Image (cartoon, rainbow, N blue to C red; front, side, top):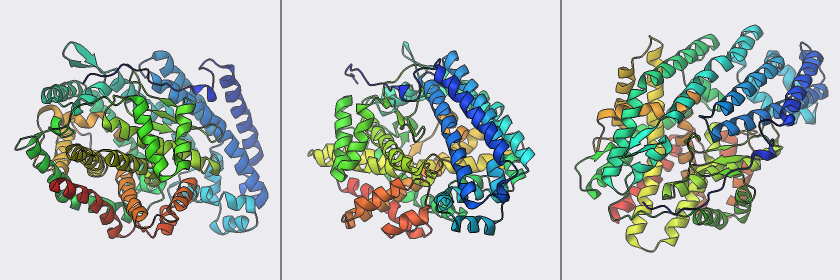
Length: 590
């Protein structure tokens, strides 16, 4: 693909701090520590005796400290993500992390003591104070972990050691992955660049990319297996002490979602494998003139599809236009990211290889990171991350402690943004063959979001269960990976050779165990929401914005109720899965 040379925008982090050497960083570190020391002296051991209004004041002081620390951490991480290979940035990120850990340890007592209060006392205080009642959702989220809380001394030790434990292993993984180079012809490509070649129109390029990726990952598999084993053991120890029944349970508690709801999601998706992924890849193999797809062909463009570089400005216009077709307000919020340099777009050596939206703090604004290669998928990624950003802007009104949305609902606006952009691109295209390509791309994205992520979740489940019995060999990790991939993708995809090492480049396994099911939750939820929107557009926009603005103040049952949806019922998930199956039906007709 011949790319158009264009200047892609980079973000401006000065809304947080002018630079990593800014004196404001030192000032804020000192301010946060001083406030924390005063807070501890004022409130430690005294929460049970506080009147309702005083407890509300204490929470507000705590929130202020959290925001200062959040601002420092956000800047340090975003500065680090610009070039993970740079030693100065790595050292800066580590230094800030250590200092923030020291500060947060000082005020750790607060949430621990809140959980020691009797439920009837908390309810009584809330009923006596509007200010305290405002923080009731946050108190509930804190107290959700009450049954799993350890002694104050144990919690303090775990908290302080995290920076030299799990966080250190995360950093080792990130810097190792970012430092890898993949031989391709005479070039040495980054992981972002090699993965981009999997959607090339030329099979040989896809094959060479697949072989290069697998070879280098295999050469580094020993260290990735060590990181995986260490973090799985670390989690097993933590879960045992806290009394979580299953490895996934801690994630479910943090998402404020019941185990049975997640089980229903996983079960529904696994049952749908034959009707969705197995069926689609069998059809795609025929399109490509093969009995089976090689793994490097899974995301290949259709034979009639011509590669075209989509200019950045065109990508922005498509996404904002699609947002505007649903709601001008949504488009106006999205436009802020482009007008104010809140987005970092160009691929660079050392840069974080993925894409994300970082909410930072409510007194500032989110930042988006992309690696833009000009493909249709990159446009969809822009729509996805911009959805996150808009969601984070809307939820900021809830304040620092309650702006964060549970992961199960955090994907709502992002996946809805993708759906809007897909519909926009489909409506603009009049050519029947190109429409087919757009629908096929959407189906593949949905398979990657639903089927693939549930397969990832199954991979994690087996890994964490087996790790309890002892360290897992690299070979066994590969066997588990091949097993779950084969089950989810079906017999029409040939998984061979070094594909067995592809588990090692999935960062969610390292950074946030069992995060992955949230993508499937979000996609099925948005499918059901979008079907609801098509059935009854009157009043939908208002309900949709109310949902996004809620942040972490409401749980999934309360948020979905206005739409007449209930995630605890199997038919809810089936409704979302039927949307994917319906698109495959359309492809068969085309």
